[in-house]
Length: 56
Ligand SMILES: [Zn+2]
Image 1 (spheres, rainbow, N blue to C red):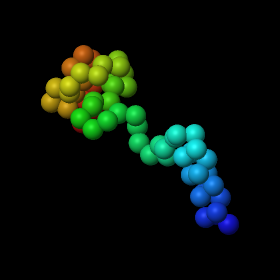
Image 2: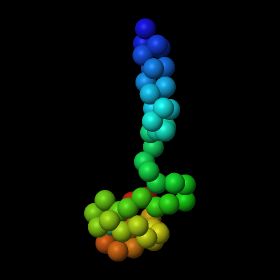
Image 3: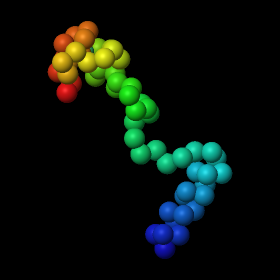
């Protein structure tokens, strides 16, 4: 039964033009915004270029 329910859910999404969301809405190559200051600039040595928060 679980399989049937999951299939119906996917059919519903397909009818509405929605794909299952499995990841953050950032594409490959895009930097996620800094959680502290919201900067989307490229990381500098793994740290936010604006506030210096270590992100990587
Ligand atoms: Zn920052």
